[in-house]
Each structure stands twice: as structure tokens, then as C-alpha cells.
Image 1 (cartoon, rainbow, N blue to C red):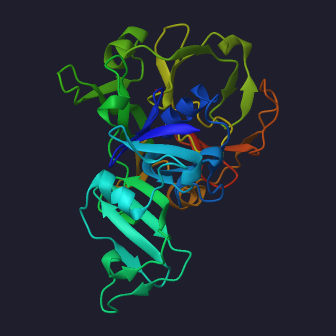
Image 2: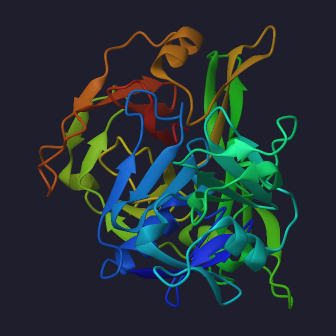
Length: 407
């Protein structure tokens, strides 16, 4: 049984780990993996047809914990505990739920947390609602109560049967004014490291050739942050640029060392065809998994020749290998009116085809040559537009974007 410390507006924690609002889904999954001895059953729930339409949910079935992530940024926005019989819960070291000796009654909760609001009785759903800043309790009432004063609906207006006290049925931890409007805060400083760089947004730097009436990419601009050096360890923001033909040294000076290096064996050419090319086998990737992208270097000149951004959707083969890359690709579609179409992780194939007039047939990748030949997510489809290759899943959403150097 987990023994959790509750911190309103912030987190749940054991002696070994802490899950904090604003954490990325990758960080939370890694914590659960590292503590599989105490967290036994984990389920990820998502909408595989519309992956950005609703929250991602991680359920800890054996522990009665539900973690909700904003699908637009994959950050933790809400922590719910809906089965208190499976947990021990404390606040500043004082238990308010430790069955059978300490039951989470209304009186126990107000004694532990104080009284910031009187608590409201909802007679339509037979629940008592008790609100604290960043903390919300729901008490289900499975027995009949009579109001002392029908014009008031506070808890003090209720008559409870002798020996019957309502118990907490759900506890919510959130940031904001209420659980229903909760939004994920910025990644908290406790989740950062001064040795690691994180990314809030990547924008592709593009230009337009009037002679050929073709756009082309020049590099990327990154909005980055890391843990500050001061006593408070506040977040420190900074910007960087990586351009095509930058050297390995240029890249590492700008954003630090990669998480790993990988030597390639397959190539998607400008026509969208997937081919193995032994002569290209020594080209190599810098994998920046926390930043959500890869860089491909030419082995001949050791310079950047491709950028690859990863959306990290749960319905994709490579899910959780990368943090979500929040990319923006501004594409000039009408130079006369300066009309620009911006591609983001939420862009669908339908929007790509409507705005970019992509008419070519896609290359199809079944990943049958991968080490793990089991792929329940279906094939990926690769569409080419100018110097950009879009990898699209069967649901029409972009799994990755490759920007190639064509100059």
C-alpha cells in the first residue's frame, strides 16, 4: 500500500518518488517504471482517432490514482485519488486517511486542513463538496440526510443519522480555480536539472525563392530553458539557433550534448520512397530526446543536413522515446498576399492537403524491418512538400516531420 504525502496545488509523494503538476508525461512514466515494485498496475488511456481532442489518462488501478495530462502539451494537469481504501494519505506528516484507525470523514479533513470554506451539499447528486486552494474533496452520501434548514445547503445544515459520517470518495489536486478548469503549469523547477536543457518551442526558419516559387528551410530557432543557478533554482530561459551546415561543435555549443548517437541505415528520398543505402550508413543522428528532435549529420563534412521533430503521440510506434516537440513550421503558401500556413503537432493530413495542395501518393512504412516486428499501430505514410517530409499516422495526425537541406 502506497503511503502518500499530499501537497495542495502541487504533488503527491512517497519517500522514494514525487509526481508533480506540470511534469511531462515522459517523466511520470519513467518514475512509474523505476518504481514498478510498488506500483503494480498502470494503464494509459487516450483517443487514438483524435489524439489531441481529450486528456491523456494514466490510471494506477491498484492504488486508486488517476493522472490527467493535457494532450496539447503532454503535461500533468490534474491528480485524482478515487479509492482511498487503497492508500495511506497524510498532510505535513499528519495522517488524514489511514484505515481502519483514521477515516477520511468531513471532521477529519477539516481538522487536518483547517476550514477555508464551509463545504456545500449538492442534493441532486447526494455529495458534499469541500474546496481548499488547489485541493478538492468529494464526499459521497449513501444514506438519507435531512436538511435542518431547506434554504441552506451547507454541511452545517444537515442532520446525519447517529454513527453515520460521510467519507471522502474523491480527492483532486490541481492548479487553478477548480478541477474542471485545471491547466498544467509550467514544468516546475524541481523537475529540472542544471545539466539538462529543455525546450518550450521550436520554430523552423524559412525563406522563399521567387525565381523557383519554392520555399526552403534554413534552420531552426529554439526557445529553451534550464534550472537556474541561484538559491531558488528558478527556471532560466534562453534562445538558440541551429542552421543547416552547422558543425557538431556548433550544435553542442548551442544546446549541449545529445542523449545518444545513432548511425542510420535507411533513407527517405525526395520522392518519398523508402530505401536502404549502404553508402549512407555512416551518416549519423544526434538524438535530443528531451528536446523532442534529432539532427542528422553528413559523415563527409560532419555538418547538419536534416532535422526530425517528434510529436510523441501515444498511438505511434515510437511513443515515449522522446518528449513532445512543440514545433511550428511557417510555410508561405501565397507570396502575393504573404499568406502563411503554420504546421504544428495538432495539424492533420486533411489540413495539410487543403493548405499545401499535396497531391503525390505517400510512401508507406510498415516497420517490418525493425528489431521489434510487432507494430499494433499500423503503417506510417510519408508525404513530401518542398524540403519537408511529413510522417502521418493512420488517424491522419503527424507523428514526425523531417526537414531536409536542399541547398
